[in-house]
Length: 63
Image (cartoon, rainbow, N blue to C red):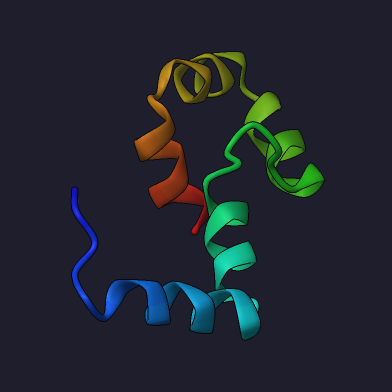
């Protein structure tokens, strides 16, 4: 994808207001809240299903 003329300014704005970091954090689906992990692991089939999900699905579930 090619960034248009307004792109660099939007990136700079996102970095300045911490939205850039927040977006990057949402991509980290390998770390889930401890209470959610504990709840999922209470039923092994549920945990195994969660583990098989692609990252995009986990991101939807977590955020």
